[in-house]
Length: 284
Image (cartoon, rainbow, N blue to C red; front, side, top):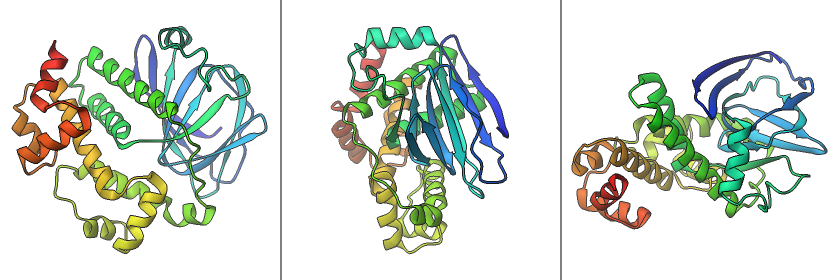
C-alpha cells in the first residue's frame, strides 16, 4: 500500500498513528492482517473496508472499530485519498478491557462473524481527539493526562455502541459533492468554536447556501450545526475544568459562551452538575 504512516503517540498500552493514503488511482490493497484492536477516525476521503463478504463504506464523520485476528483489504477511490488517525491498542489491554467492562457477552465483541463496525461519531469524541492532537503538538500535558483522555474517548465509543444503529447510507453522489463540505465545516468549527460563529458564516466558508448547508450537515452528522457547535464548546469546557485551574468564568468565555449563566445552565443540563461542583468531583 502506498501510504505515509507516522506514529504520533506511543504509550504502554496504545499508539496513535497518522495515516495518509498516497494511492494515485482506484486500487484494492493486498490482503492485510489485523493484529490489534484498533479505532480509526476518518478525517478525509472515502474508502471501502472489506472483511469476509462485507464491505464497509468509510468516510469523514465515521469511526471504524476493528477487532484483532482477521484478514482484510481496502479499496481506495481515485481522486479521493483518505487520511485517518488510528489508535492501536495492545492485545493484553484489549483482553483486560473486555474483562473489566464485561464485554465478553457484548453483541459486537462476542460475535465471531462480526470483525469490524462503523459508528457515526459524536462531537464530544471529536473534541477529545482534537484535544489529544493539540496536546501532542504542544507537549503541554503529562502522559497520565493523555492516557486519561484516550480511555475517556474509548469509553465514549463503547457508549455509542450501546445504542448502536447502522449509519444511514449516504449516496455516492452526495458524498462526491459534499464530503469536502462537511470536512471543511467541521474543521472550521473545531478551530473557531470560541468565536460567535453564524450559520451564514459557516455556509459561506463552505461555498453553499445556508439552507442547503444545514440540511446536508445533519444528514452526515445527525446534528444541526448549532447542536454540533454547542457540544464542542461544552466538551472543551469540561476538559478545561479537569485539566486547568482557570476560573469557571474564564473557561466559559474561552469556550465560546458569552454568558456565565447560560454556560452554567447548559453545562448542568449536559453533565447533571454545575461546573464548579464538576471540578470538585474530578479533584476528589
